[in-house]
Amino acid sequence: LNSYVKNQNLVKHMLACEAIMLSLCKRLNPTADEVTLNKWGITGLLHDVDYELTKDDPDKHGLLAEEKLKDKLDQDVVYAIKAHNYAKTGATPKSLMDWSIYACDELSGLIIAATLIHPDKKLSSVDIDFILKRFNEPNFAEGANRDQIRSCESALKIPLKEFIQISLTAMQKISN
Image (cartoon, rainbow, N blue to C red):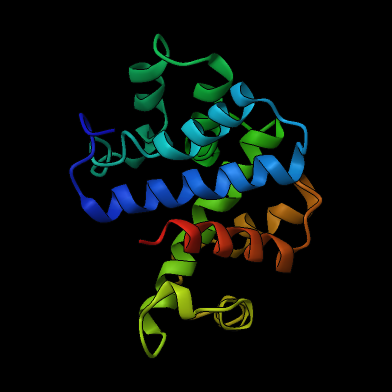
């Protein structure tokens, strides 16, 4: 992470996705072992490891990460990282881990955007209703793909409201 990512806001986003992925793993795999939890966490933590390197060529985002990580991580983790940008990489999400990073990547950004317009700008003060209201405002955080976030319902079988609550709570736990 520190070798390729310098932007501290991007690091915070990646830490948020790690926390969300760990919570999703526990929700979707209640008996998950330490190896499985680590895979999900690393997927969240490193999913944007090539983001700064590919900012001028977003079609390579995920593909460059694959090159950098293929000899360092298990292939299912590398695939999930590649699949989180499947519109560009062509790596369609298949597993729960793939779909989880795909959906939570966008939601974490929306949660942060909502926090920044909250009166006190503190993640700890934001609640599910505030996030849902922002989610339903099409002009708010336009870059956060709502369909991608909503994939939680079909791919993960987690209702949107629960998915947002899981993600918000995970982010709040690490916010300090």
